[in-house]
Amino acid sequence: MTFVLIFITAVLSATALKNNKLFERMALIPYRVVHRKEWYRVISYGFVHGDYMHLIVNMLVLLSFGPYLEQLFKTYEYAGTLSNEYLSFALLYFGGLIVSVVPDLIRKRNNPQYSSIGASGAVSAVIFASVFFNPLGKIYLMGIIPLPGILFALLYIGYEQYMNRRQSDRINHEAHLCGAIFGFIYPLLIDFSLWRVFTENLTK
Image (cartoon, rainbow, N blue to C red; front, side, top):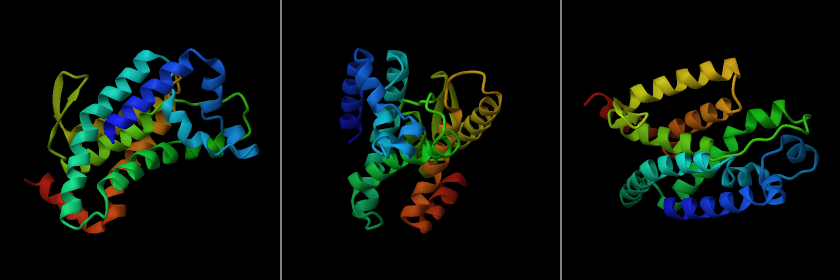
């Protein structure tokens, strides 16, 4: 499923970057979602990006974590913990997209000029679900510095909170935070007993 998501996102993002009408039609605009009932936007916005670098970074990170998580879900499906690996991954990814923009839908619902794009919230969910299952696994900060997943997660949360308070750039840091939190608790929504997996792997 990871490769399908990357392919579809790449095609739609590249097309939307050349087609302003499509770009505008797919972007998350809370005003239109709430007042015009264009609810599809809470999903479609994750398939368009502001530029190619935005797209490439998100897709590379998804490629780094998605297949691992899919394989893990397959293992739990065989063990009887999950009913379907593909459904579990889809619920994680699309759930991350939706949960990420709930604050925007509430706070920006009366601002017709506000919009948000990109799969970062969903990708954050995938990263943090991976950290849940492998908290001591190495994640490379800036692609260079190896850190235990749990330490990376704490630094990520701290950074995103700091940047969200500053609001000094055009990045939706709150969406990153919401997606990350959703990704971490997602395994518990599947089966709360999976908490033991996290604690056991954290204390190895």
